Image (cartoon, rainbow, N blue to C red; front, side):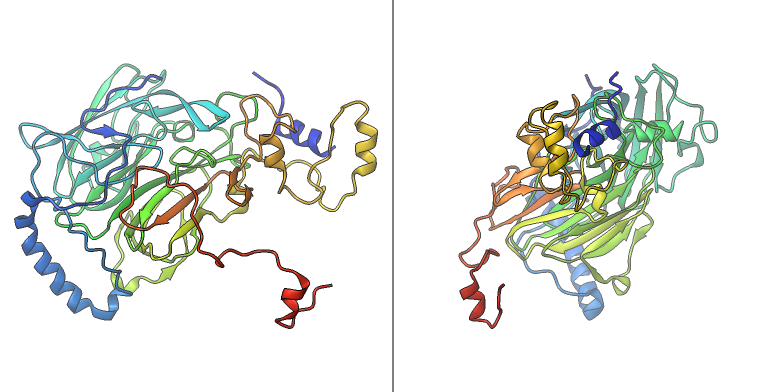
Length: 473
């Protein structure tokens, strides 16, 4: 293992095979909810009730969503065999279960070691479910009885806790308290009825500090029966890791100074963009199983309304518009918004050190330092040496990406990505939300937005500024 630490690197610059999932597990993005003739009759009554309720709610329900003319599929329709996924998990997958002869929905989850790529250039050996980090997003419907087989292929015992669910105590998954731990090689069965709907999570509840920190987490979405009221439904698990540059495993003992911040196990520039149609009604389901930190997730160009937590829906009268939602550790937050502004929009954690990749915080403050004399002294010993950080970190990622700056093997310190107008200096817990005219192919990155003429900020001359009474010196 390399002994080259983040401190060493920053000082130098300043001076799996997976288990099978029973049921449908696919990395393909589910399409927006579409019309199903077989479900239409089942949905009519629900529609009438919903319309009446909406009329009674009136202004208390807040701003009305823009019409999308997209009929909804009823999730109350009985399904034989597999049922379709309705939630998109960027960089991940969904598992929807298979209906057993007695009507229960059957799933299979395998805990195992996983070689996981956080972003191009950074791979680590983690622990995950069904061959991925994080595990697949479970999808169920309120009123289901679920039957979940959990196989342990880890070298140590584990359990699974169904976070936020109202279930029998013996199914709660706390090792030593509500069940015996699942020994290596064993398979346990969890079975319980689902009496709720909303956004929940699952994770190990045995040696929690180690096993959650290494990736044993996942999202669990329970749909409400009847028609849905959104066009796009997206699940995002937030997490943080300490991966020392040059090493091959996350450090589960970390309590601070996390240096890899992820959405669904990926750090930008490894995060897939989220593509939505213009005027789509969109739901984001955020879960946070980071070891220590809360995350304020901010969306540019739009506002959203927090509609639910893992404790249940928020009454319409208790909601208000926000552009940032704080997702506390061990919680979920569900937000809904209308994609009424075309363009490429950033979405990221607003803790600024959480949008950096493998950044160390133990080096001298070089901002404002004139390092030209130092560079002249060092360059005979290290040709090409250039002290970094005198004006912040805006050019460090570009230098790393272009090979101007050596970094330890298997690391992505300070790396962002090239954008349409230059280098995007953010990394970590960041992604792009791309709003495009409908119809839109949500499975494909549409590329960068083509801005209408006159709608991009630009440099101006002194003469142009003077026309508005602004004097440039």
